[in-house]
Amino acid sequence: MTSNTLQRRLTRLGIPSTSKARNGAWLAMVGAVHWKMLADLLGLADGTAHNWHKLNGGDRASYVASRLKASQAPTEPE
Image (tube, rainbow, N blue to C red; front, side, top):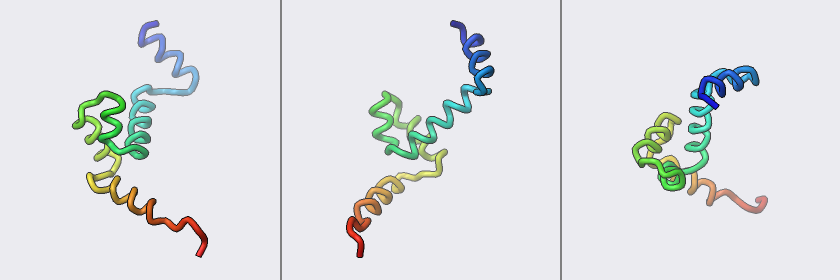
């Protein structure tokens, strides 16, 4: 199947742009997984994964901060 055929089929299914879908998937992944882990899992260059992380509004410390916050959340009602 050619890329044009695939694009026409996806458009008929209501997916107008594969690049928008791809970009949305990237942003969702870097929001859920640390960029370094994502690079290692997918075989990406560190710079590529880090750039997506920055585009998603993250910085190098945001993942660590989110993990610390999650680990300090109370597990029992007060």
